[in-house]
Structures are given as C-alpha cells and as structure tokens.
Picture 1 (cartoon, helix red, strand yellow):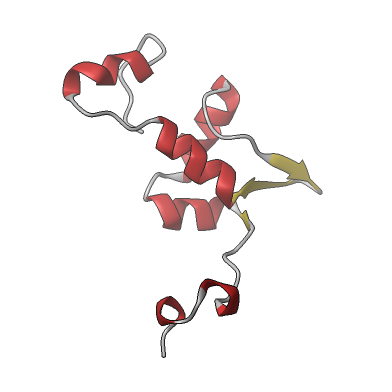
Picture 2 (picture 1 turned 60 degrees about the vertical axis):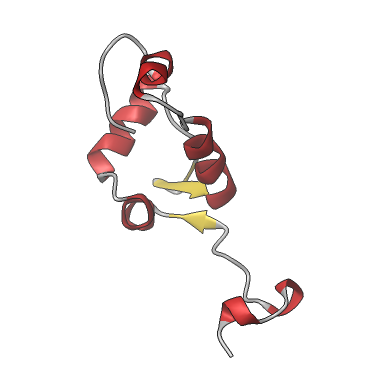
Length: 86
C-alpha cells in the first residue's frame, strides 16, 4: 500500500519547511531566481534563522497557485514591469 492509498489521517505528513535546495528541487526554479525574488519582495514569505532561509511548503504552494493564469493575455497582470517566468 502506497502513501496515496492510505486514508489521509494515516499518511506521513508533508515536509513543513523547505530549504533553498529543496525548494529548487520541488519547483524546478533555480536558487538564484528565488534569491532575486526575495530581494525584490516578489515571492512567498520566508523565514531567516541561523543564516538559513526556509520556506513553509503551504506558503510556496499558495504563492504558486496565485500565479495561475487561464490565457497568455492574463500573464502580464502578474508581472511587475518586466517579463519573468514563474
């Protein structure tokens, strides 16, 4: 029986916090892009502790969900003055 076959109450909890390396692996978006987004204030909320940057998985998913578009004409409404991939 796999994790997905189990009832939700019996599944292993998803990872709550992600490092930059884990975030890159999860999204396919480079660490340097995430760093630039942090510097620009254009990204999910993050936690800085002991010189480490951590992201809550739910915040990342919510931020990515907020970037959903239905057509290419909607894409420009999510930009801040210059073209960027999500």
